[in-house]
Image (cartoon, rainbow, N blue to C red; front, side, top):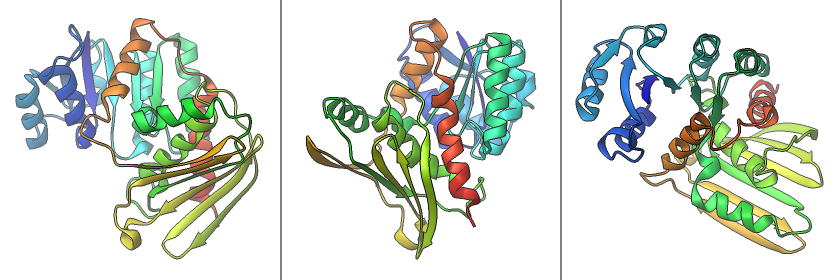
Length: 283
């Protein structure tokens, strides 16, 4: 299976190439093409991964690859590329975020449904071992009364504000509440600005949810932090991603491509974008 990557300025591109090419974690699956032309960055990545095909535009990957990974740092660039590939029957993984508006996210989801082409999109933080283990533990709780997730994010980021890093926090919270991807409808949503922080609160099912987006300019690049509480217990986790935090991402994308796991539910794809949009656009 030949994989193409767009958005190679993102450090995630290096990880994907290392996992699939240098380490050969999935025999028969390799990154074989990069878009963005013969830039210094692409030439370095090509050398590291033994990649021969460098094309100028994302569209030029068509016919050169069997699937694509879209990983531009600015999520506003993702929908147009994803829709193009999906309309042309190319299985697509959109690195976080799927889009930077709920309307655009719906357009991508409709394109996948229209063509019947596999689509996957999620934050890598959903599936790091500490989050997965905590979600499994919480399944045994009768009630979850509170979920709080905090992490670095800036409303002023040049890469579409909170969408760039804040979506990690939102997706962690959603994974803890519904690891099966069930529909989650937030109520009583409120967004407030505090010194160095934007805070989103909502009620989701029976749970009070709070997501704290901490400005790196004020707090530094803080680790992701989780606090959960329920009748059966209380848990706290601090998450600092290691060099292999994208390994589960690659595994899940390949599982979708091979049909080993079903496509993500529409709710799982749209809910993170909807919540970040509310937080980003709050006045």
